[in-house]
Length: 98
Image (cartoon, rainbow, N blue to C red):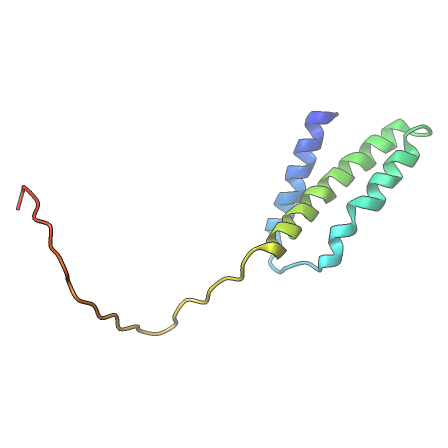
């Protein structure tokens, strides 16, 4: 089971980056009920608990990617028109080849 948790979390991260728009920040809380449901199902239906745990791990990967993206600095907009840059050459290094 532990190796599949990493695969499920990676799939959740990939699902986050596959989206075209930024999801609602409320999705960060999705892993909590899924993991709680997996714990409740553990004694009655171990196979269902395994599936729910993997789904919760995927949701955890998605949530971590969403959280880190929300903490990142905003993207600086690039100039959309021509920009004039002026400067002064203060020193020139001569290379042996010329």
